[in-house]
Length: 194
Image (cartoon, rainbow, N blue to C red):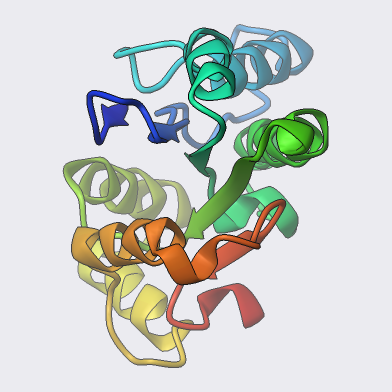
């Protein structure tokens, strides 16, 4: 997805770890272990083909240390801390991203660098539109029925918008969030609870 540096002085780095590997079935030719290993590797290193989360953090941290601190906000997924049928490989990659972020928070806290994670839910994106079609085919459902199911699993009663995720990033950038590090913020409208 997008890796955004929000200031020339690099006080904030927002790194996203979205990967588009969906619904691996046992009858596919690639052994499932290879698929899982690839997904975990991509989840930690690739940012939807536009960057390398690990390497970007590695490059940004020395600059943040020199300036006396900063904030790193990593986007994972609600799949990173729950069971997700048909998406075990994807969930495993997001568990890895969360583990990376939490460990990084401990490692760089002494430099006044805060590392937090945001876990979105069912976000209205072109990637989600493709996933709804794929999931519908796999489950023998109409895509609109899949979308309606997502809404029914969201206590706030709607599909999440990209702006909802952006608002959470801004929240973690506020001066009032200066003592927050190692947080995993679910931005799901409550879908992570169902």
